[in-house]
Length: 282
Length: 293
Image (cartoon, rainbow over all chains, first blue to last red; front, side, top):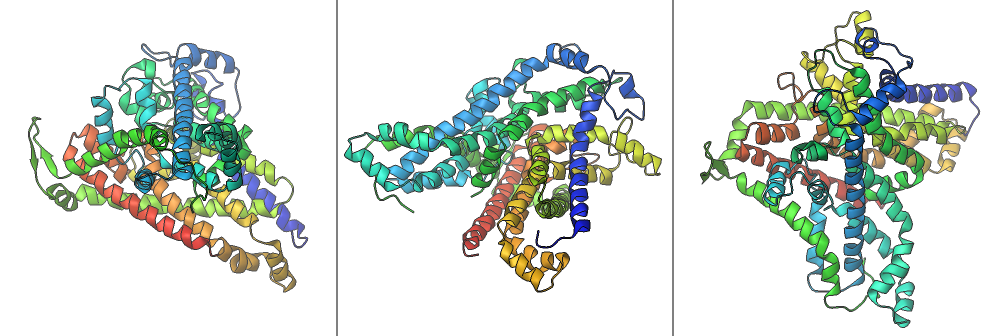
């Protein structure tokens, strides 16, 4: 800092700490609730410190689910979420890196039309056109399938633009050298471009993994079979079931499990995450 | 910007563009076209027949009080989400930027809410404010405030705003912090030598220099409040009680899926598409200008 003002420094620390505490509070209470028994969680005020039922609760939701007839084990919904998140992230990266390659490294008739066709998709989130998109997916017979969960979400321009931006910054000398040495375009792509794009791919992967994992409306609409439910939608659905005696402890254990994978990805890949966040906005 | 050196291939580029174009056509242009097409049709209640009605669906929306009400709620909601979210995260970013020790640790503690799904965020906040077991509802009762978002519309709206802001805070914080760290230290030192205190330096130097970032975040937050908060609302209030938290994007879904009013829902989709396109243009124009800063 420019000058020494111990009081202000302490005050800054206090304000940030208070902010961190406010932001962490909901998750702390969720964690606490997931470690108590059902009875404890029905008395007001509820405890603010963890209880002894942690392993029991988590084991129950993972293997049996919420515990009512027909409830889905969280193990299964977690697997579905993982398949969906990985599918969306990998699918998006794969189709957009090759289309960015085509747009940047080739001259061909209609190139600008393709460019603009991709560009306009940047503008419309799936929520806006949800009803007709559902109709299309239904008429293609893709309801209740992983392809229905994944494929409609991987058409997005953000990733294509990120790769385009990056390819434009790759020196032309590399391309020239590859051409002089007689490398085919695909050879150049695999051996030079792809390895160079590693950091962009990692950054994009983090963002798209979270995007895929956190999808809510889409899986809610197109899945009717429990074997395709994702964890985020089951948590929200269970929270809205009117129960005579709600099992808050189990619901909150489910919520913790639904948060854990994407939060871990963000915390451990923080550098890539920040990079991805900033770059996808360019 | 164009590449000087390119490859000459006849079919390869089309092959490479193929997957993305097919998916875009099938899941983007086709449904969007259908939304526009259905927005000028009225479907028979008994199915089958549909009639071309020009802009009747739109006219009906503009006459409809519940649409105006929903639009009004959306405006209030997005204003609150943007104002509270930006204010709070700017405060945190300025404070985190001031402290030298621990800034990275603080960052780690502030980035993760972004990873929590909006629908799950709704469940967490609904639990905290649950009328029978929620700890915050209990504390409020202790100081004489009866908080029950299940029956009180204003409190429901407030709760939805809190959950939505919480979910978006890390995004705003990261961009503000990056903006602050890119401001040259020499400017601040010069001002300090001239006798400007921390408050003066903030309002006269940091704040104006942050305004491009702030404006960008404002647009992002409005888009987020319009469309990204569906999960929060659906898991907390489902648009209720009454219609007090039914924002526009939620109404599209409600009318289309629950009400089976395809024409009206499509007309609403078309209006929302126009809104997003307008907002995106505002944002792009601004980014073009930002280059000159």
